[in-house]
Image 1 (cartoon, rainbow, N blue to C red):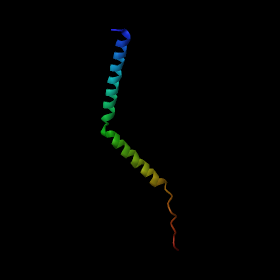
Image 2: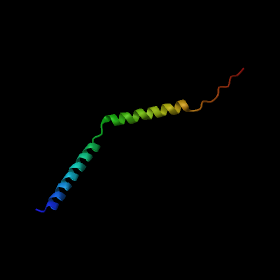
Image 3: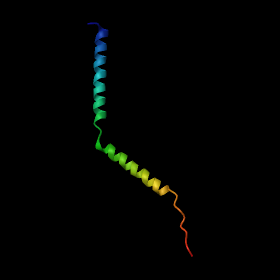
Image 4: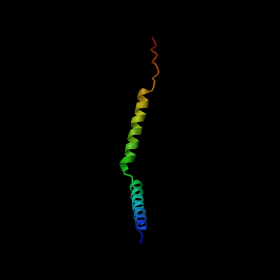
Length: 61
């Protein structure tokens, strides 16, 4: 077999293995990702509430 054909076959097999590993790694996402997103959303909401301008209190005398 030609050396170039062997290298091409090996390269193709290596790329296929890498692609499979990448798809498996991205398909299974840990539950901590959702927890992290919810946590940062709550932090953002809290910062919006704190930084929102409050109406001035009118004191009746």
